[in-house]
Structure formats: C-alpha cells, structure tokens
Image (cartoon, rainbow, N blue to C red; front, side, top):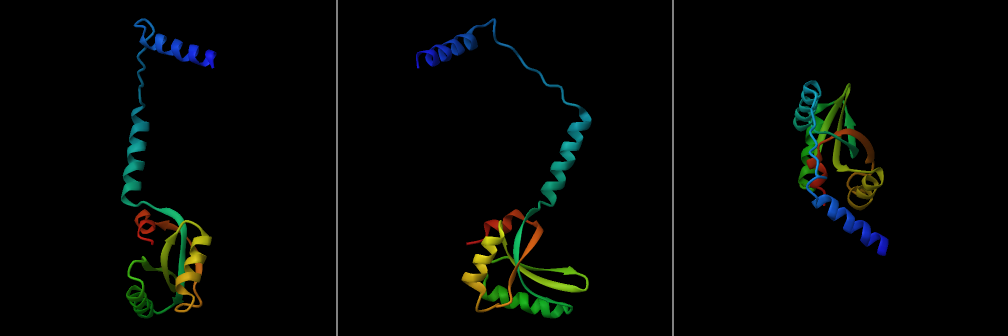
Length: 135
C-alpha cells in the first residue's frame, strides 16, 4: 500500500514538473486520411450488421410476398419486415436478432401459431436501426 501511494505521488510530481512535460505531435499520412474518410462515408451511407431474421415464406410470385408482408405488418406493426429477391425466389423476412437463439425465441413466443413454418435465416446486411425497434 505504501509503495503504491509513493508511486502515485511520484507520478503527480513528475506530471507537474515543468521540465518533464512533453508535447506529442502526430503527422498523419494524407493517403491514409483519405482512405479512412472514404470508409466512414461508405459505412454511414450503407451501414450493415450481421445477424439473424426470421423467414416466413418463399415464393416466385412477387404479389404474394407483398400481400404476406402487408398481413404481417398488420399483426406485428413494431417488427421490421421486408422481402429479399434471390432469383427466382422472393423471401419474406422479419425481425432483427443478434443471435440464432433470439430468433428462435421470437418464433416460439410470437409466431408459432400464425407462422408454423417460420425459421431463422442469417442476414449479413441488417441496418442497425432494425435492432433498436425490437421489443
């Protein structure tokens, strides 16, 4: 304990002594700064997080997927819902979950009666705001 107090005191003395203060100057490479700024702009424009969604259905008919999305939004207005097109299929996916276990819990608690065929699907492009809207 005494040694610790001595070291802390010595640190304050050295920091306060005028001859010991040093100035650190960083010189940033302009190319590195440009690359970093480009990366920041790209990620602010299209932020994406890896996670899980629940897939409710898959069909080749776009009008069917639009109708199913509308029905789901009426039942669950606070849950994000959208479809993706992976040729030749349109897939209706809902929710935004950080883990497969969270998606499975959502299915068990909310969807087991309405959508018995629902299953977790990995998604590499979830917008961060979708996670915030979950209850």
